[in-house]
Image (cartoon, rainbow over all chains, first blue to last red; front, top):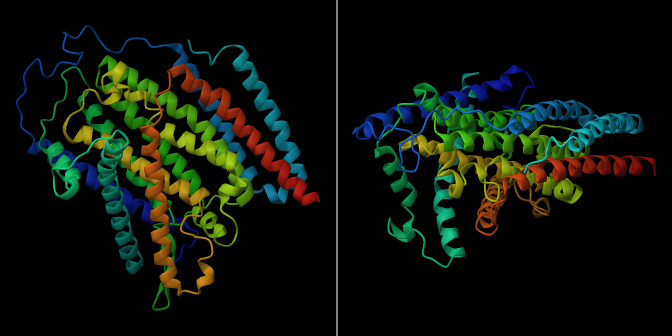
Length: 123
Length: 342
């Protein structure tokens, strides 16, 4: 009953998914029907430390967060590129190492640029 | 085939229940440890030494009124905690809990599934957890929740880059990304933490940030944000968020133990000449001892270190941990090449 290396390996993942979804749905339904229901208009307002809530919460937020998200996409894609290289590092030897030095160099250049431009500066 | 499915299903149920049990008792452990470090008693009323406290808490969560604010998006509001809980449960699938049991000539692996991309699977599922927080925080339509959710997502994605890079140096030395193979390699050789001390430090720091644990608990920083992304939540929906955090802590402790601390292995255990099945049961015990130690470590840090400021958090993630992990990759590569040449 060992792994076979095929798609059958993912069957237990599906089993776990079924168990997890079943648990989540049952719990949500249970808490919905078990709890008391004493709604009032004030109770259903958005919480703002007791004072009346002002306006909509979906206001524009700092562009910094968006920049971080964009940079994350860039860097994470590069990290994923490194995985196949790292797995085969021993067989690639010196050649692979030099290639990766070039790749890292380009990566660091870009990294240096975004730091110099102040993209990661938080006041 | 049917036997295979039944065996896997039993294993899935066991792992699922153990995750829930450990998470429930982590809440108790956290309160007891906090109490101990602050010279208090901690929970002591429910059952002997307050041991029934997690059950009492769970019942309380179920019996609370469920509040969905008028201004929120109802379905997304419900979906948020469901995703958080679901992703937390899904990660336990690839952890090797012990070496295979042999019963009546059949080998039973103590791992739900041995997919050959174990590490990538963990990363993929963990990063989906961001959606739970982001959707929940946005759907609440509350200013505190939204700020907490944005902070949480920016923090989690920032530390994910450094975490991915710290693993690369480890993968270079192991040559595989299957968790069972990494655990098995440490059976005869050294634990990976000796080969990768810097990588381990980066990884554990990032694990703290990924789990939103102190000193990186800015998303729910109560002095500024009331409750952070779960300000509007009540009843079991709040319970799901809190519970998911503890399950994540359990799973990341398991991943840390497997990757860096030998998983189910213990030095010199092979020299005792024990039977295979005894060894594998001992292995499970060792792994859980390591996991419980790391959960304790998480809590110890929480009650020792104060919280970071947000700019410090981002600086640590981007300007220190990422260059440090790149340096670690280059260092590992250089040492391995040098060993090869000499």
